[in-house]
Length: 206
Image 1: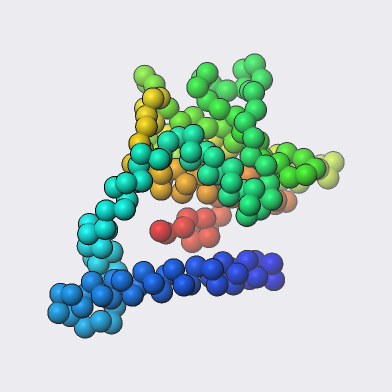
Image 2: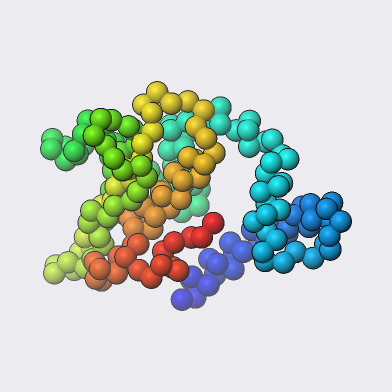
């Protein structure tokens, strides 16, 4: 519990200045309509939408958003934030269900911590648009070893897509967060592993 609290406090210290700045912008937007500067909880979604419409920076981002750049972003986050390696590996024969499915391993200095299968591209007969599926959860085995978690992320990205939308990028990073949660889970019982928990702990409402 102390480690969790330390992480949350440290994250909040880093996030607070940006949050305060953005709330100030929303307050200014509210005042521009001749209203009181104090933001109520129900004001935030409305004025956030107005601010997004007025600022065009987001329109300039998509040309840099590719599937490869998003995967590279995951690699950088895991490396810089958690000191972990995120590397693509060659699947064994019969390990994946389609040739376009990619296999990635998350490692620390000693071992593989989890396996991620990415099924990112559209193809005939593929119905799922965006989802994360746990294939094998973390648990303590009879010999005292930890069962390696395995999970899959499914998207419906055009194979030659360039200039992805910011909404797709946000969805990708949201779902990859679920995957990392599952793959770094270290639990005694598989049914408590990763995203198999209470919704307020599992689902970040952003």
